[in-house]
Amino acid sequence: MNYSLIWSQVTPHIPYLLGGAALTLQLAVISFLAGWAIGLVNASVLHFGPRPARLAVQGYVTFFINTPLLVQIFFIFFVLPDAGILLSPYAAVAIGMSLNAGAYLTEIQRAGFQSLRREEIDAATAMGFSVPQMVWYVILPHIAKALYPPLSNQFIIQVMTTSIAAIFAVEELTGRAYNVNSLTFRSLEVFSITAVIYVVLTLACSMALALLGRWLFRVKARIL
Amino acid sequence: MTDRRAIFVGGAAAAAAAATLLTPKEAAARPLEDVLRAGELRVGVNPTLPPRALFNDRNVIDGFEPEVAAAIAQKMGVRLVLQAVGSPERIPMVASGRIDFVMGAMSRTSERAKVIDYTVPVHSENYGIVSVAGRGLTTIEALNKPEVTLAQVRGTTAIPYIQRAIPNAQVLLLDNYPDRNRAIAQGRAQASFDGIDSVRFALRPFRQVQWEVTAVPAFGVTYSGLGVAKNNDSLRLWLNIALYELHTDGTIERLWEKWFDGPMFTKVPVSPFF
Image (cartoon, rainbow over all chains, first blue to last red; front, side, top):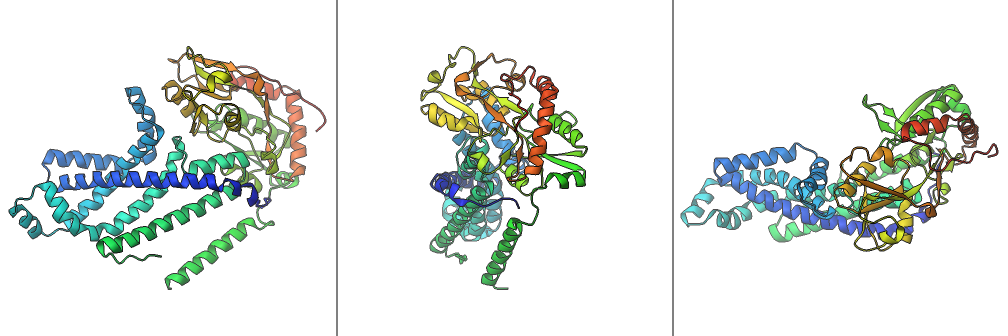
């Protein structure tokens, strides 16, 4: 290739890229936690709710799993303002990613609910637990261990997915990489460094999740 | 295979792939003789920058730059192959010889010229403020306030200038010009400081908005050439001569007026010496 790698033109921008990585992580954490909460409520509705509520949840899941995230955020970012709802770029992306993750996490947690034994539910019902109490005190501790690995995977996917935010004016890691690239034209160097930052970020997240899993749920996940 | 061995083998494979990619003899940019011998000129254009390049109603790449490229290929006596390129991959694609030159608002800057060689200019780029009438945003001073948000396209030449000369304004970096225009129309941003050559074309879909476009000659004019791989002089020097002929016979100006609904704001000074 008729191209000489010159890293020195890109390395001064590494702190700027790392700032973007912090925003990437923040966006992933917020959207994952919101998506997890949405998924938990939806899985409860699918398991215990009346038929109209179940149909509504199924409709939500079908819509968000079968449309691209890019289209969903585009709708929130550019179509809602015409209806008088003008969200900041960060809020629009966080809401879009949360709703999207919520659909996948509904399915993951629904599978966990289905793994419950009937006797546990009957015992909780006999003790007079409400549905939220049953979910919090009986179901969650039971399914946490089984669902921890797929939930961790979903979090890593969420970290990767944040790169879509660059299209909507959120200056996360990929967005900043584009900025540095346009300034220096050093595409190979810029995106190589960006890829390394993503690898370090996701490996660090995987290790942290594995340690957290061991500590909280005694999940024997590999740390590396 | 153990995990450690798998990681080692994977790492070795990645290193081998990188070495193959960066080996000088592999896939180098093609000099003029190779292009002529192959009978095919490969040109990169960015179809997200209408009317420079766009997908027409038959989903074929069309626009000012594809037509200029076609005129160049005709002079060369070879077939034209257009390749859609985006911002990140355009330079590696030129350097690797996947395309022979790249178009797409390739404004010349000294920083960019460290990585890529430019031909003589194809067209000028003129700058100004795009806003909605009645907002009073017609000067750089008016833009330089914290309550003003400028919608800009990521990676454009105006960004470093904004950081330097309009530091107090907020900046919203979007992916393309239609999104930028929509953001201003919806009130997400108040204005934009950018090239104004294509605004007549780009603002057409927003007929309900009363746009205000103010030229800012003080910014100066930049020039866009064809981006050629570093040191591919046989091709670049031939392209200079072809562009000189296309300027002097009026082809470039005619194509510009066809696609941009009017003449260039600043004519390109044409010189027979390169």
